[in-house]
Image (cartoon, rainbow, N blue to C red):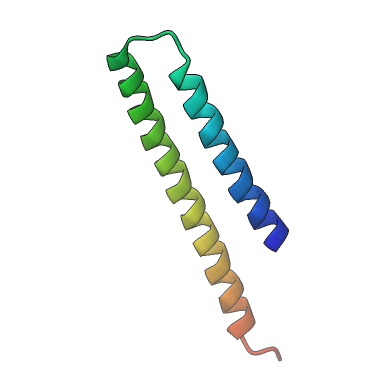
Length: 71
């Protein structure tokens, strides 16, 4: 679990850094670049919220399974 979380965090940080560098060196006007950054940031935030909700539901189901007395 700890390795998986570390990998996910590392991959996320690496992709953010890579995307930032790519956007900074892209030959687009500033207004278009700001619009692209805003759009991608919103998309990224939505993806994170969805992943967090999915994990929350999974953990709640697991907790309920553990709380259910075994016959």
